[in-house]
Image 1 (cartoon, rainbow, N blue to C red):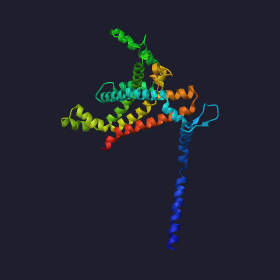
Image 2 (cartoon, rainbow, N blue to C red):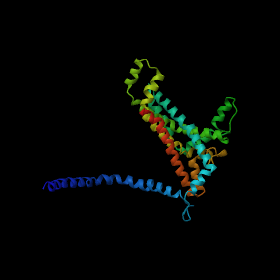
Image 3 (tube, rainbow, N blue to C red):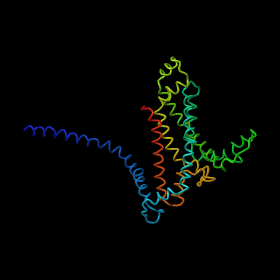
Image 4 (cartoon, helix red, strand yellow):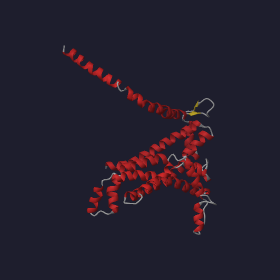
Length: 308
């Protein structure tokens, strides 16, 4: 009798629970477009790329399974390793200065500065400017004969440089454009983080006799650690996928000595110029693991310190 009563007592609860889940169908229906779009434009292309990395396909003939042949060739491809080297060099030449400049600008804007709203808008404009148009402009700025950089050097009596005709010059031109484009974006994010820090902490530090340097390392940077982690991770993801800037400035081949060739550019050339989609998929997989590796390192270096 007791077991039967208990069973009958639990049954309505189960029924109510099932009815409760079913009653949320409107919410699931409202969210369904996102999951459908993610399935079609996110999950399916990802799974297709992984499968394609183990195949040989030119886009027209039937696909041919080749196992690990694409990855084996990838490890022996000198152009791939050159593109990897260029990508990492451009990453350090652009990302580190970008974040440093952004932090300095954010600290300046956070102080009592007139026309701060104007400066915020001005700093953010490069981020919403067309990449292609900006790249064409920077290619003109670094032009050998008519560029603004060489015009300034001639005015100062300094020997002009063939910026886009030398490997180091191409890297400087591309890195300069990336810094110009993303410094303002990160400045706005850092500024939001700075404004969230209670002013009482700075006042207490001032009373204790802490100087600007001590305040920076004891209050500002520790409080900004989550914001810094976010900017570092997003900058890493974007920096390792650089494509438009070197492609427009240096061309599809990467310029002199292929010094501007990045991994994404090499992926593009293999897929859409050479029609070797299987090998391009293998390159795409290497980009994914490279971004994952650098993101994990940055998370450990920046985010891990907060746990100590």
